[in-house]
Image (tube, rainbow, N blue to C red; front, side, top):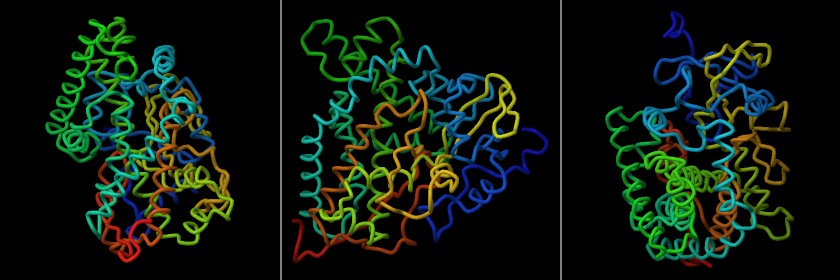
Length: 418
């Protein structure tokens, strides 16, 4: 740590208790003062925080900034991910040409056409989960009743992973995405998850070799093309598959919960979202919620491979940068009235799925799940409301993915679910 490290602000900063869905006020102040801020991370290392939308897009599109976590100076986001990424790199930590080759091999599972074929199944899952929630009586916790199980079930079906292991996966993944878990506990969680996925891969290898199972799910394709094809070791292949499991689980789950919370706190916007005469498609509602909320509050991470000028500041080779999308998505230079939730806004150029070659592979799937979850929930339970005050909610500050631990909701039992 350099001599002036203690003087640098710690990142990520805590949000204001009165504004849990907005970026921290200190961060907003930094953005208005300057586009680049030196910040201190969890491990004591320093990095440049890129605060403005245009500069973030420029960095994400610049191949002089590497996503490779093995490079010296890379700004790690949490102890568990640092352990995992040093052992075996998933897709999001690869640079080209390796990144593009692996991404192309998996992209077919996430095309808009393929995702739309899954929409009826996602509707069925959402209906089943709402049925169970209503049958259990109110109040209910939306996180455990819908937000967590829906994306977990969808990604498990897409990958070909047993959903019966859901409880183990959710519990262990919670440690992985924590920024405060002890190092030993983080290592144990990564070991358990990588071992679990490696066992699935080994079993799938036997089936593929015997040709007793069709290779019609994503895990089977990864096994055939990457592991049996000799491109990656067993642990490396497990890391690739594990990233898909994690990415398809926690971020979407927290967007479901926070999106419902945001709409309940903005009844005028909720009325527009569910009124068939308002001419506001649910796809539009989802994009605005993605911009407004942005659950990846620890930012995207890169390291400079050579000296690069960013907004007038020279970032030296080996220095890390953090791209705070929640600041970029609220930048008044790029969005009109950025701190207002406006579901009529046309806003597909937000940064919640990243930008450039590393833009989220599963974005079409996440968008579709969110559209179905919001539309079905508010259609079937029009009297839905919070069962507690916002100040009582436990927000996940100490996690890579921001969200709520629980979201108590209630509804008029006389009307029930429609």
